[in-house]
Image 1 (cartoon, rainbow, N blue to C red):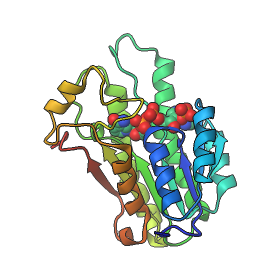
Image 2 (cartoon, rainbow, N blue to C red; image 1 turned 90 degrees about the vertical axis):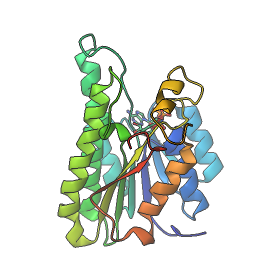
Image 3 (cartoon, helix red, strand yellow; image 1 turned 120 degrees about the horizontal axis):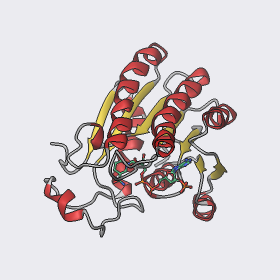
Image 4 (tube, protein in one colour; image 1 turned 180 degrees about the vertical axis):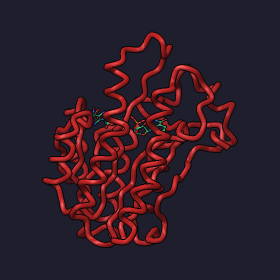
Length: 237
Ligand code: NDP
């Protein structure tokens, strides 16, 4: 299929995991994307070679670098913001600088990237941000900062949908449950506990999340905006 042929696409955080699956999905569907990475240069270069995409190093914690990257890649038809991470552990023991970095990557970057993209995005533009079911449900201790960051995306999508809707630009949040990536491997120590919350008792695959992101970025989703799309095996149900 060449659904995205001719489209200009930027994926923030595309070197590994869900982001890499999204890069591959766009390549399969007819477009070469530009994607960012930060720590994983080797993986990023290998993926760029594999898919014919362009890898560029940009730290999502650096607001001005993110804005410049979006501006330099524009005008964009599609922006995907995937970069994100979690910090686990006792909230009373955590380094506040590390927590602030999490907020910069998980919250500030999606906001500023979305606004910058919308400056030049044409009618029919699409913004898709990878949130988490933990924005709705946080059944475990030690992840409050992560849950906060993913809940914040919900308010962002609701508000920016109002700002961009009159121009035919949509913004949506994909909310995965446990997905088999380096960040949350399917053979990790917490798996039995995580699966106990779920109706489909397995980790999801990055390709399953990429499929939802591609649908939201595609022509069939033109009336879908300001909404959260959960893909979690009923973790949050
Ligand atoms: P991984 O750790 O496997 O991959 C994270 C990706 O984000 C990498 O490509 C990484 O690039 C990039 N990234 C992280 N920090 C930065 C940064 N500062 N600047 C640029 N890129 C960065 O994570 P997942 O694939 O599992 O997660 C992807 C998204 O999905 C995240 O937003 C996460 O919160 C969300 N999610 C994941 C779930 C899961 O169970 N896996 C569940 C729910 C949500 P690099 O390595 O080059 O730094």
